[in-house]
Image (cartoon, rainbow, N blue to C red; front, top):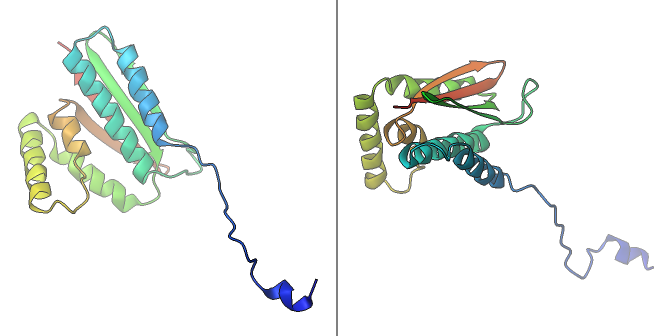
Length: 166
């Protein structure tokens, strides 16, 4: 081989492909599992629970990260004849992000507040359609009729959504 040709880039294109798990597939799987687990309850309540599970998981995937105390997002569904509880835990290294989430959750303390906040956010999106959506938590409170609480400990954000059943 000519020594001068050793420093030249190859004459053909090269492609590197890396298989990465489709993380969003997990959201679809959890939605299906929630749908199946709650098949015995009213369609409106079941649909609301599926939506809540999806919103919380999507947020965990978008904003979460692996941390020493929690390497992967954790999803929990608990239900009884009187209540549905959905809990999602994910790593979060930015404490200021937790404070922003806490502020939103605190502002959604009752149904009237949820409706006003939801409609205000919809109006903001109409007025400026190129901004990021950030409607999910409001959907949980207003459309889903779930109460939200959140906590943050050891770089783990825990979002808990509860709905009483009639």
